[in-house]
View 1 (cartoon, one colour):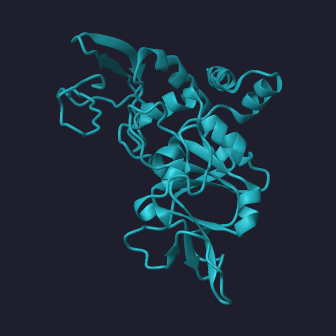
View 2 (view 1 turned 135 degrees about the vertical axis):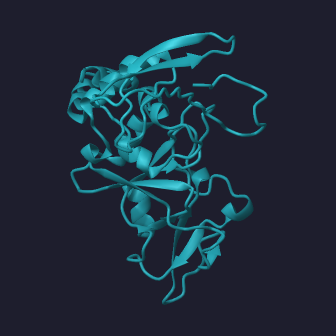
Length: 274
């Protein structure tokens, strides 16, 4: 992995994996692990370990540093994903330059037959994991409300959820920047629409983990390291979130009940799977 570099393609975020292929005689196909190394800025290679790179079409889990190796191996042993937490991911529905529905800077006086709900932008998700609607009002993002036909329209969300910034870069503190939308805020407006630079994690049932709890887990350092192992692009893809390996929810709840801080509890829950 070439991560610590400079003077390569100005203003472009780039992660590179070097693959060496050798032709050989046909043989019985068996699972084999691939050696992974990190090329340091001084030209030295740091051995990270050996990992199985799946040929099923799933993302390749490649640790970015030697310190991530045991964490990633433990996460793979557990195999828990968003669905085990009772959530599914989808991209925000509204594409700003295509959508022709009226948008407003302030909540207007609603006439009979007209329904207006909040429009959520990626900038409403703060770097420290809070949801603050209208936090940054500039350019097209000053249009904070949108007119819809009904709350049953496609793309209208009428329940609490977790929101993620869809575009983040590898040099940010966290690749996953998540914030919960509270039940009280949803009840105030009845529903909301997200712009397509937002990813929405929606609960699948009443028994799903609370959005506040899931957002806090996604914002932890161990989950960030596991996500970086499967994502080399600057966008957070729904397919990657579906494949993101999370700690055992039951073990995590047990550790939290003992008063363990969340980052430590998440790491311990990962490592207990190995």
